[in-house]
Amino acid sequence: MFATLGRRTALHAARRTAQHQAKRRMGGGAAAAPEWTGIDKVVRGYFPKDEDMVVAISGGYLGLFLLFKIKSALSGSPEEEAAAPVAAAPASASAGEIPDVDSEEFGAFLESEENVAKLVESFEK
Image (cartoon, rainbow, N blue to C red):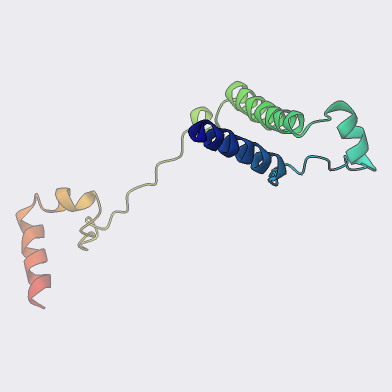
């Protein structure tokens, strides 16, 4: 009998505690919808919820991106139409000067024994 009475008392206390506890309302619950004015009122007429606005803005950016990509694909790149002119190689080796080590002419410069001697002489100076 005391066991049943103890369980009923605990159950009754738990129910009363649950009824009187404060509840958290994360979204504010009863907050009134804001009054939109100007351009916001017009836009919110078409897209009333925030989720609708997100989809509309994302779709707008995606549309602009796709239009740009299609336009650039149709117009072609200017590099294909006119190849960049190749700079004429300076004739420094023929003038008796030693070309820069990083240049493409340096390999051809080293093929001659006279040029190798010039290079060694320049190192000794």
